[in-house]
Image 1: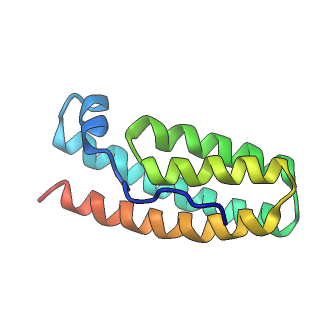
Image 2: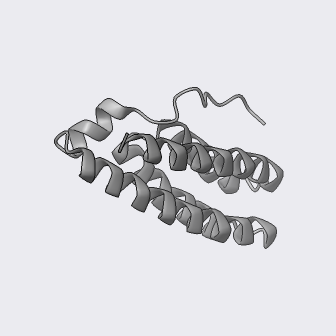
Length: 117
């Protein structure tokens, strides 16, 4: 898989800007993102297995925007990679990026827990 920088799981400054620095809203939005992206990971897995390029691209594009808006930097980069690799019919690359995305979702879930601390 092409090297994708996954060193920044969450840009907290961006999340603060989006939520006007409201800690409860930050936690709520991040939790909703984790739930939604977890569902998208499952749908993407099915689309990749079915070698459905259009489905992969659509699902990845939808989630990429949501992640980028709240500062889930690494997840957004991985979703962009999935979107472009699906367009090139490179499903093995998509599958590898999806595994990395699942890890990022777990890290985001952990980040959400620390926002209330």
